[in-house]
Amino acid sequence: MPNLRDFERRLGGLVEGLFSKTFRSGLQPVEIAKRIVREMDDGKQVAVNQVWAPNHFEISLSSEDSPKFQQIEPALVKELSGVVKETAAERGWGLVGPPEIELFVDTKLKRGDLDVEASLVQGEEPVQPAAPAVAPRQQPGQLRVHVDGDTRTIPLEKELVTIGRLSECEVAVNDSGVSRRHAQIRTADGVSTLTDLGSTNGTKVNGRDVQSAALHDGDTITVGTTQIEYRSA
Image 1 (cartoon, rainbow, N blue to C red):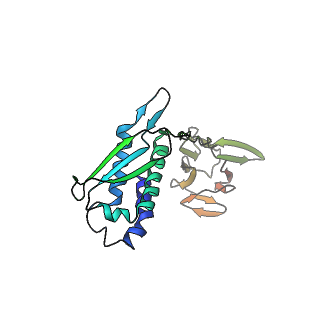
Image 2 (image 1 turned 90 degrees about the horizontal axis):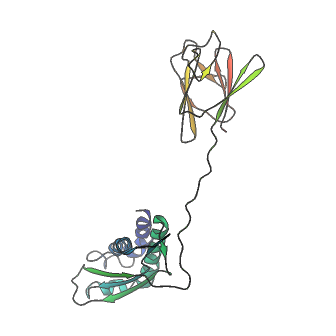
Image 3 (image 1 turned 180 degrees about the vertical axis):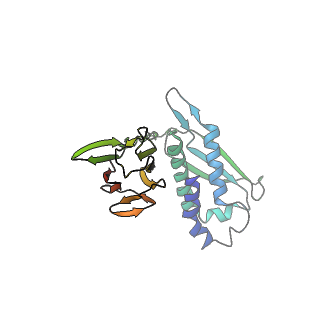
């Protein structure tokens, strides 16, 4: 989970530096973070139009583990609060109040053991989940086929578009220098790649012979005597 990896990285310098010997064994900070995420999932409440996750956590540590965590308590509480907020945002959960983290000692716990009590504690300003971002629909690229002074525009709406002399080709050209299935353009993740299909006379991009090439806005494809302009959008 990304927010747990970030948590480990942010606390890593502190734990591996000043307190490296202290944290060689016993309970590790990331184990507390993982437990909090699990308690958020287990304790979430589904309302009519919202899912609310626990925001208050009482963390009990053994008397052996507690001293080493007291040394980094302010930083740990801050980072664990960040884990709560990031997890809620990532999963679309709301929080009825800001994250609250408290550490306690439980003499009944053994070294390495951990107990977490999670609850929903109302705050002055609930943290609403962010609305999912809606990415604008990307316009497909297009090919502009120039023949005898006329221009024909063909949108690259399919993943695969074939250029050739056959009528079933998406870009059918009446050019004796063009093979029946001359070249193909594959578009994936917004990138269009031109590949020659073993044509007799070859394929050029900007005057250079190519077997395969990524296309960029404004590139000119030449098949036979036909010129085709690629536009990215």
